[in-house]
Length: 117
Image (cartoon, rainbow, N blue to C red; front, side):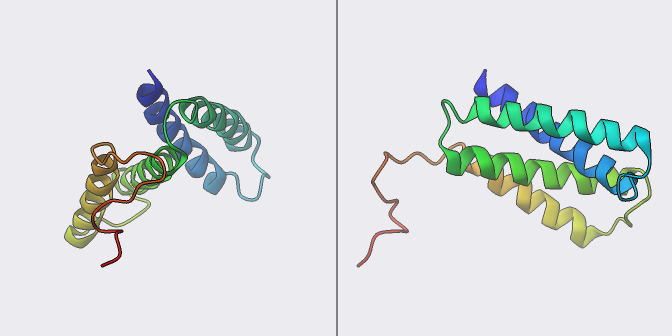
């Protein structure tokens, strides 16, 4: 359940980031209201997910997926130009974030990459 809430919170992050850009410095009421609701719900969801997920994983997934979804939405709506390199970089970002779910370490331990020789 915590993973579902975290992903929903990442979607809400993309919503509030997009609304923030459209609010024109909080001068447009509808995007400003959408921003306010989405940012609060996104933070509540992130906080809930951090009850059972490590902060390093939860925050990285939240920010990484949120950023990727924001760029994808901007490309789909024509705000941001689409290019093969952007698509490749977004795929790398999402792949890296998803990969964090599969890396397990116990608190206080290091992965083989982190160990000093």
